[in-house]
Length: 205
Ligand SMILES: Nc1nc2c(ncn2[C@@H]2O[C@H](COP(=O)(O)OP(=O)(O)O)[C@@H](OP(=O)(O)OP(=O)(O)O)[C@H]2O)c(=O)[nH]1
Ligand SMILES: [Mn+2]
Image 1 (cartoon, rainbow, N blue to C red):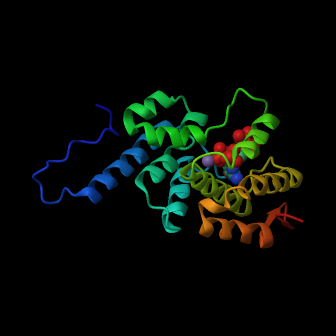
Image 2 (image 1 turned 135 degrees about the vertical axis):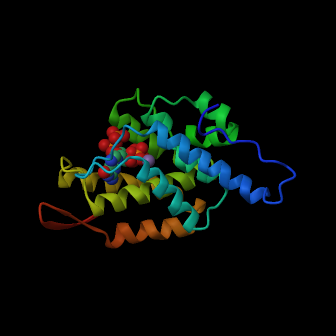
């Protein structure tokens, strides 16, 4: 038994209803991701634990009306295959086909060169499931806000602006998946600023 495996809930217990079950499934994904990402840090100056990102992506979804447990589990797990040794088979075994499939749709093919990988996200943005689009919208929103909060010290102004332009090219194809997340992204694209070496820049010109 692994620490993320869900202990069977006693069917006779009065406290075991379907919302308890959903919470257990969600927390199982959080536990799994926390183990898988435990050695990873974000690229910011403080080396923020990577798990903060995936929890934040799930929080953005839940607070904008996207509360399906499968979608939230996929959000928590969305970088495990891309950035850790986790396999899709492992996700399928532990969390089922639907969650594994959403994560698969959110996973870049790391064997491609970077430019091809970035182009592939633009090409497939409108073709993946609605759930995968919702996770990607929240992922981009989190990363764009993170760039505003504290850009990685080695990213130039040009690279930061390039990320905003590219993210807009991806997310503009996913509007139908989430009106609230799209509106929050619109606000970043229209009004967002970031600071680099004490100078303030608009995210998009
Ligand atoms: N803004 C920001 N991003 C950071 C930070 N630390 C790690 N990242 C991750 O870096 C990725 C974006 O960096 P890039 O240089 O464009 O891409 P790469 O790591 O895949 O080569 C995102 O991956 P991703 O979540 O898979 O999203 P995606 O943009 O690749 O779809 C993001 O989560 C940080 O401190 N700030
Ligand atoms: Mn991510």
